[in-house]
Length: 385
Image (tube, rainbow, N blue to C red):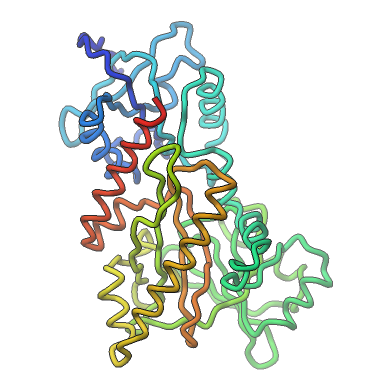
């Protein structure tokens, strides 16, 4: 039984509550994916005149008879103490709702914060929006300057004739869960010997096969064989991407606001390189992160101007994204993932409202950017008080 400890301190500084959730009830807090950044924010936030606590959904007086709030403080590497706290002044929402089974727990919690008029970031509407890949690509395609960076994308729920046209239009494509993440549920499709072949991975296991026909029906049947709960998929043009030492890669570009009233800015970028033989570059799938400057020099060892030109175009794209998204969503942080094809063209393939930026920059050795991520979270929280 977890004991509650009354916070006897008379500290009247406003409280920042970092809202997280555990995927498994018995999972230790230290294993949560957001913990590295959360710990750094908790250490730094006192410098901005605030107290910081971790908060789980059960720590708010949402369904309890008493109206007490509780927060978690770390007493050792693996141990946390639950103490009574004052009502938070700001909530940093680090819960992620890719899977609908977590919604019954987290959504009422978020609605409760709104009813209590407690400022909260990240924005719920934007988090859900970026997770819905179809909606995100549809919005960006309305901007002529951004559209040229987007691969052709349609929903698997489109009429059969449109799906058939997509087959004829592209030499290869990818089937992605509309609300997926971390590379899960992605299927690669390509023609061979006048038939459409597919391949996908589940953990360390790789699966291949042949579609019965190039049709929407055969694709839907294929998605139903995967051991995931995804209900909808998108079809996306496959980019003939460059390889780094025969491995797939992408570039993660991170943007933040320093305060609620400031503009989005490009904080930094890093290269994510998939493990050998993998079709995904995700760190969670065995990939690694390295500094972009070193990566581009290694990618173009005999071309002195190519790295500079690519970085310049990424900054141009970043400015476009900041202006366009910043006008529509009052968010603190998000990231985009980019690919570079064999013609050195840049493609925007993904967006992420919770990009694990601190962890990725730390893994890449980009400590200046990692520290800036934490500082910006603190100044943003302070601006909401």
